[in-house]
Every structure is written in structure tokens, then in C-alpha cells.
Image (cartoon, rainbow, N blue to C red):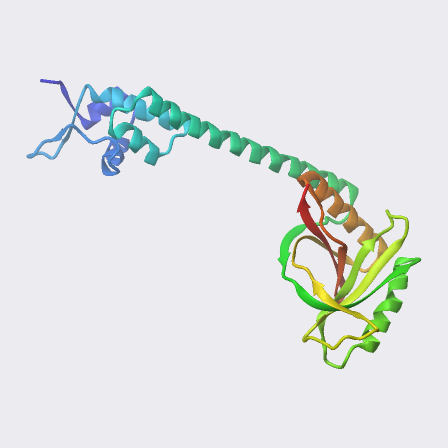
Length: 258
């Protein structure tokens, strides 16, 4: 007959606590060989030390309790253990990659703090498509787009526009010329008008930053967005968007994977 050990004795032999063995019993991970019907003491066989050693070793490697139950409920083969360890390895590699990316982003954020007196935070959001009226034009300077904005508002029917308004920059200072498209969001479909164009501003996933209307603040935000995209492997998927938010300017870069 195999030697039987009470829980405290078996725990000491296996290098775990009695509390741990009770927990393993409760979750059906390692049941005692028997329970004394009179005293209700849990009794373990010496052969179970191998099973306990497998649980402890695999748990230290990071195998979950659910996976441990599957592996130890039946005598696991070398192939089953190998597959479990390969699965675990894949998770660990992924976590290392995620941690490495997070570390790189933290370093970038620290660098940006050294470059700018005020932190510039970039967020991602999804923008649905929206009906707009717009006027597109080449301009000599960024401020010249205001003439298009005034013309657009002057020609819109009363109460047709909503709060959305801004400029789409099709060509910026890094191109040979500037080309902007002043636009407003519409509450309803309008009749065609030669003074402006009617179209859908397409839905997009956007990298966004907020800044004041001062030129330097906007330039810093553009730089922060470009840096953010470059380090995350994105590219532009459409014209840059400037949205007027009362005293703030929201700069939006439509995103596509590089």
C-alpha cells in the first residue's frame, strides 16, 4: 500500500503551503488521494509528488491554472507539454514586443517634452462621413484661405450649416504650392450651387492634436503628429484637416498603415 501523508506533511515534502494544496483541491487541480471519513483529513500518496512538481514547475514558467488542469488531469505526453510551452512562449514574445513598443513611445514622449515647453498629446478617433459644402483654392499664404471661408458662408442658405467647419489642406508648405478647401458641415442636402461644392467628407481614422490658433502652436502640433505617425508606422490617407473648436484648433491626420 502506498505511503500516505497528511496535508501538512505532503506540503512540506512538495515545497508548497498547506493553503496552496487546499486551493488546488478546490479548483480540481490536485485532489488528495483520499479523505479520512472520520477526521476529514486530506491524505496524499507519495506518487503525487511528481504531479505536484509538474504543477509547480509549469506554474513558475507562467502556465495558467486552466492550462495546468488540462495538462495534469491526464498524464501529459511530451508532445502536449511541448505545445503548451510553445503557446506560452508565443505569448511571452508578444508581451516583450508590446513592452518594447511601449518603452519606445515613452522615450519619444520624453524627447518631445525636451523639444516643446508644453506637452502635445496625440489621440486616435474614428470620424464618420459627413455632408459638407466647400470651396477649394490655391493660396499664396495659409491666411489667404479666410477669403474662401467668407465666400462659403456668404453663399450658404440660412440655417443649413452645423457647427462643423474648418479647412482641408490638400497641399501644404512641404509641397510646391498651398491648396486648401474651406468647408462647413451641413444639416441637410442642398441644391447644387455654382458658388460651392457639395460632397461627403469621407469617414476616417484620425490622429488628432489640439492647439491654440497661434502659428507656432499649430506648427508644433503638426510636428508632433508627424513624429507620432512615423514612430507608429502610419501614413496619410487624405488631406490634413483643421477643425475650428472655438478658441482651439483641432488638427487631424487621416491614417493608413504604412
